[in-house]
Image 1 (spheres, rainbow, N blue to C red):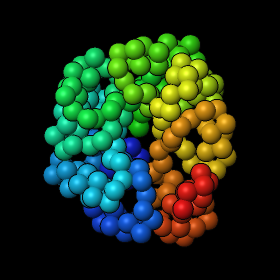
Image 2 (spheres, one colour):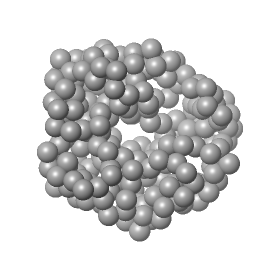
Image 3 (cartoon, rainbow, N blue to C red):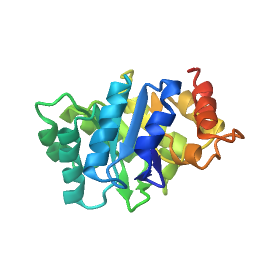
Length: 219
């Protein structure tokens, strides 16, 4: 994710060119932190590189979140993450090719924290898929009430073998990546740890991303 502290980084258009040699296949950004035209151009650059583009909703008001879903349609992202107004968002995405992964549990604030128990996560995930969502975007390491891995396992049980469990937020070490893989996550987002040069000892963004890719056997 071209994000830091739950916001799209201001120089995202420069960074997408800088990291092009890595040939990343999945690149995303948030709905806040940059103007619409910047995000439109960013999305075009991501897709032109051959990568799948992701927009994650972190807007805190219901109306702003739905406006972000409309923005996703306008700029043409591949996948929309986040938000909790599932029926309304799916209606906005109707007749598009955008797949939707909402937040299960009870997300609040910005940067977002996640309330809820494993039972909540299981119930929400089951309901979202029944409504037509492709999967969920789980803020496991932002949990305030439960063990993060217990939440991942609950979502995994609800999804069965469907490869559609994305975990987002505060994934900042190989240990956490390993734990998510073991618990059944299919994908994770990472931003701040790379831009803060805190994921590994690599002194550059390219080095940080290369180390992250190495953790999952890519590159």
